[in-house]
Image 1 (cartoon, helix red, strand yellow):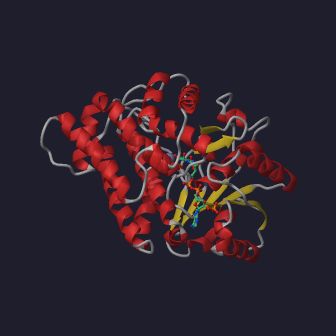
Image 2 (cartoon, protein in one colour; image 1 turned 180 degrees about the horizontal axis):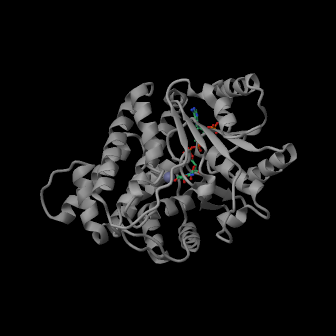
Image 3 (cartoon, protein in one colour; image 1 turned 90 degrees about the horizontal axis):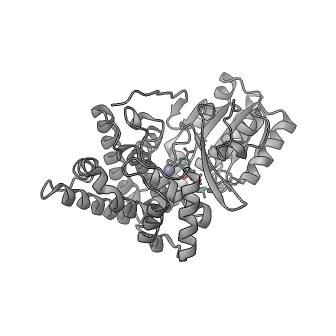
Length: 392
Ligand code: NZQ
Ligand code: ZN
């Protein structure tokens, strides 16, 4: 067991109609001029944006709005947001949407609070010394960005998708109304459930230290999301299932399910970021498409954890050798992905990379992680390529 820091400063306001508390929360955290940042328009169509601006108007809070954060949010819009904030003297950011709007807002916040090019942080050249305060109204349960310290941005030039983590970027508050997620397309709901589970699985499959309490929380979270993902497949309007998944999304990525271990593996995410960067696929679907190939490549080096996962999360029969049990767990997980219409390889994901593209992705991935990375098994560029090839 390792020592750890656990820092979750985000005030969570959870439940029906909680978006009506946005203005009060902004005031509580000192905001006087707000940038409302959102995505491609779902919050306009659902009427949420109008409710939020009405709420701010009624409270006398002035604001400017910037939409257009796309899935795999782009650096160009971040620069635009930074300029807008400086011009309008914005002192508080309100992201209304999913991980893409939130991550884009975090990047804008770093850009306003620090001199120089904001991409430097995503390029691991230097550390941010601050971030504009940020609040969130969440519309999709997925990334956990509403409580996490990370932000993932894609630079258009070279399609480089990179994450940056800093506690300065943790939101001051997160408004979570499960009802707001009911307008999601079924595909995005399933992508979200996959991402939530993966954030816990990345922390679970390690060779470095574990705690019984952390494992119990992780396994409970995984079983809960697995069960409720199927409920939502059949009944997308089930409020309780929406709520279970939404809260799980935050707990899966606020550090709780990593306490006591070595920080986790994270290679499925790193591999997916190459797919997201190059082919613009939905993050959760990309994770599902690559996970089985990753798992089969590494499981022998992390057998006790794969066996435990098979028994306690996938609930396979405790029969046969440890390797047989572990493999049955991987198969059961892939069956689960299929059951919620998630892909289990690149073909099903809808991409068909050439050998040159596989080589390129493995190379960019290796550069992005500084050569090699992983805890279940340390992967170098050759291993990354082998996993990409196996996932075609
Ligand atoms: O853009 P709009 O029009 O809002 O539509 C979005 C988008 O098309 C739509 N949507 C969201 N809420 C909706 C809705 N449609 C109808 N009703 C609603 N209530 O869903 C689509 C996906 O939204 P997006 O914000 O892109 O999804 P997600 O939350 O999955 O974010 C994905 C991004 O976050 C990054 C991913 O790599 C990807 O770039 N990640 C961020 C992390 C973090 N900051 O901690 C960790 C993750 O591992 C991940 O890498
Ligand atoms: Zn993720």
